[in-house]
Image (tube, rainbow, N blue to C red):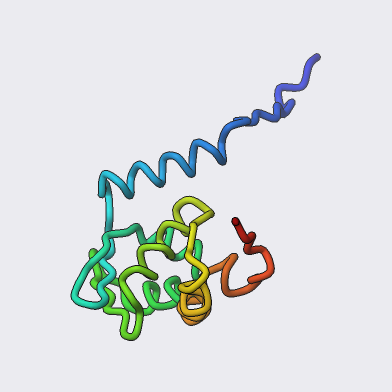
Length: 127
C-alpha cells in the first residue's frame, strides 16, 4: 500500500521578483494603502505591512497605535528623504546623491530602516 502523506516541494522561482514588482505597482497605484506619512507639509501613502517589515521603528509604532488608517507625522524628516526611504523599502534599492547621503543615512538610522541603519557598508557607490 502507498502512503498518502508523501510531501511535494513546490517553488515559485520568480517569487521575489514578482513580490517586488507587485509592491511597487501597489505603491504607484496607491492601491490598498493603509497609512499616511507626513513631513514638511507633504504626505506619502504607504502600506503598514511594508513599513513594518522594513523597520522595527514603524512596526512598534503601528503595533502600539492600532488604527485603520493612521497618519504618522515625521518631525525633522525631509520629504525628499522620506520618498527615497520608501523607494528603498519597496524596491530594495535607491539612488541618493553624494551630498544628500550623510543626512539620508542619518534619517534612515533614526527610522531604523533595515539594510540602511544596520549595515551601511552594503551601500554601493555608483559613479
